[in-house]
Image 1 (cartoon, helix red, strand yellow):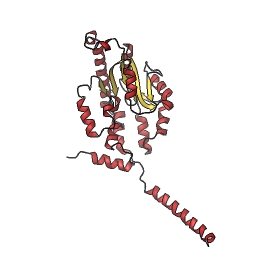
Image 2 (tube, helix red, strand yellow):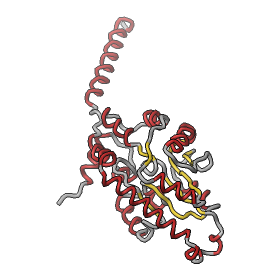
Image 3 (tube, one colour):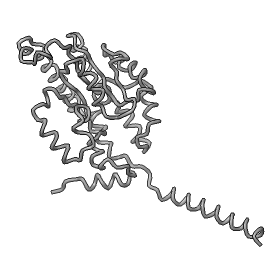
Image 4 (cartoon, one colour):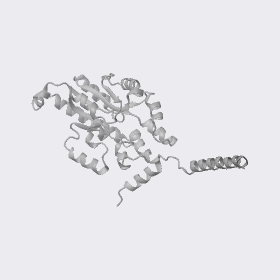
Length: 275
């Protein structure tokens, strides 16, 4: 009896499994990344974006020149006066423009994934963010050490990142001052390594996490509050570049949860402030 009915039951189970799998696949909505189009086009086509980048680096140069003025050095604590200067910068969307990678994801409806990102970054085709090369090379010419602290992967991307930075014209680029992620994504430990030997004149980034750990994993309202607390530092020690494509600002809307694309869309719609 069992020998006769088992094949039938097995066939039924297999049929149910594949039908369910196909149904689930059909029911799952494809990723819709159209909402990112405006952000990418803004960074690729808006002259206003370029103006903001030049503005940020122009302010950076003004602040650096103020720091280089010997009169202002006297205002520093004695322990810091003889320390060598350094500037800490992020890489992606701060000195290198990855908007083509973001555009490719939109065109193919493919959400961010490490495989596609590595394929892009290892091409070494990212262009320099407007104004970044002139500013950092000017700083280096004044004896300021540049440190590139990025969450690119140290194991898979370091050499091609160095080559990309050099190719677009940055002068002070070595294996020692390109500090990529090895374990933790937080940058505070790497920043501390720099501040233990250098006086950091300024930090430049497109994401609040590029400046201090005070912003990490914070809600939208808490990020606003922390930003307001530091209001006197923006444009002085902290220089921000615009990035409308992605960032922790979007993760905060999702409350740092692992969500489906449909759930993310719901969160974004609910976050809109209406009249």
